[in-house]
Length: 419
Ligand code: DGY
Image 1 (cartoon, rainbow, N blue to C red):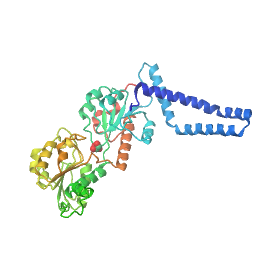
Image 2: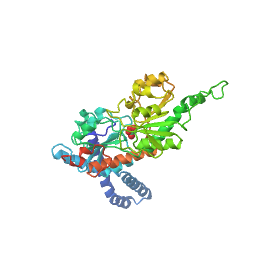
Image 3: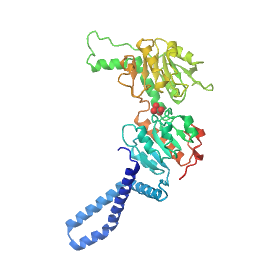
Image 4: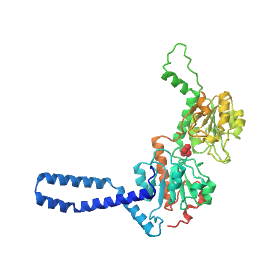
């Protein structure tokens, strides 16, 4: 079972601590045993063997830094049993719902008792429900769902820390009512996502998928081969819908590609960057864009923001880029306009249903370029996201201020949590 939780986990901790105690006793008595053996045998070979065992024990001791944490945890569990069956955590208890490198877990263990889901496949709702009962905080991907049935199983929960900027995996109102904060990782991924957006624009405008297929299929150099001609970015209008951190980074890159940047945002106080213009309405932005890139979060107001009517406003030569959330676009309507070549193409990092089913109609089209939700998927960016999520988690469960709480009204610090 991938989940290191419940009775089996606790039993293995207790066993581990017992073994450690045994090893420690042996280690403490080692000089005495060594002296005795030298006295008894006075034989160089035996000294070597015993010294070797001593070295191994020392090496094992050095490798076992987490043992200290395991022992603490075991003692707490014993405390819990003697005080009426409920775990009595001296440190806040957190559940990490995704595999994390050991160095991150060690960082967390300095402040918290840590339980971790270490399998590579996403945790199932049942596994999450089973693991969350004791948790003061949870850390997981921005795709990890928290329906009310799961929240009902988490009476102590004070914070959910998304490793991601999006938070459509939770019902923010419901979290606030329960006094649970949602923290995210804004900023650290903006460059990576913006880079990918430019990549998608170039991929669709320059037919990279078809061109690469020509090479792989050995057709490069074939007599009569027609290489598809693309479209320049230079001089084209990029309409950016949603001018948050990522939208702004996309704007900066587009300006460097000599594009005209038009931006739309529902926030009236939005000040566009000096090189960009502001569109008065979404419709104006959709009509003017040669490329239209979406950078809004998914909420009830933005679900299917782009549907049949909005596609009807776009130029026939327009490319739609979506690296936000799949459901911001009505995917059936997108299929219809792409299949009818009512718009030129689409570059997508996200889909309404991820991963797509094999029968997903979009996969049958040539004028769409799809990648598997990789906007933030670089080594550096993912590391920065995890580090920020850990910072958020530790701050929230230890009652420190946390600037990345999305629903400040959840009043993290005042939630009553019995020990
Ligand atoms: C985000 O940060 O929200 C990315 O889309 C990953 O889910």
